[in-house]
Image 1 (spheres, one colour):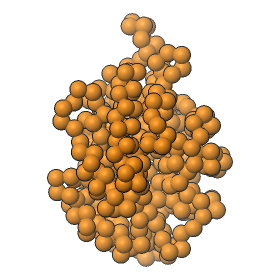
Image 2 (cartoon, rainbow, N blue to C red; image 1 turned 60 degrees about the horizontal axis):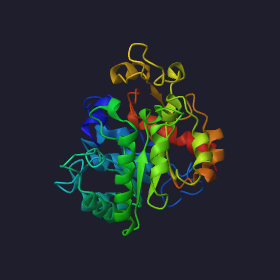
Image 3 (cartoon, rainbow, N blue to C red; image 1 turned 90 degrees about the vertical axis):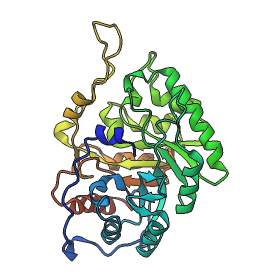
Image 4 (cartoon, helix red, strand yellow; image 1 turned 60 degrees about the vertical axis):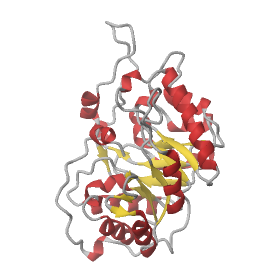
Length: 331
């Protein structure tokens, strides 16, 4: 995960390690009993618990398994040290196995790889090696180049699509698919209703590149995920399931024209973040019962709880609340 993304998402400074939790906080479900649709057999994007992972990744994974999660989506690999959060990858594999956890997907920084004229780029071959070692079948680019989002124009998105296709060709040999995860800026218009995400979808090969739909961010952008599932069937096998505080549900107005320049409004992340607040799944304004009707159309394979910022003091209680809602709501 890039430092830029962490800054954007207002990562909280590392807090004190959560103490041992009361046994009644956890359910007895694990991978051995997990069944049903991807929305019932929900995973979790580990970025949600990044502060705790930085202190004791083994304890975090053990507690997630006790809650009932059967699979996790990784982030933040340290390629130089072949580790996640200070935990060597072979040890991570053992911890996952010990707690009946699997990992089908991971976020891998591709910010430099996706930027034109960037000579120093990430090692995609190494990412493929790591993902294959972990048993993952998806390598996801979590963000575009983050140095200046206002410079993301049609040509930039076309170049990103070309690069994703190239990475997809490399990954295909290992049985892995490359994917792209949206935020809100991919829905900024470039005329005639064309948006960045549309360009990526149009210029990538379906057999090489897929997409991970982040339900919070597409809704915050004022767009309808069902529209994308219908227009691009089978392109969204991964979902990020997160919810939006009802008091902060007004869509962002990123497509208004700047009267001074005659261009669409520029993004000011500091201002944008003032109108962003997350909440536990089932507590907010996003209707997952309706979205579930489009799971087949999107070709949903895996879904992941993610909460970019948790405001509850007990973060495990937060991710358990989201897990319990999905487990009770879907079959």
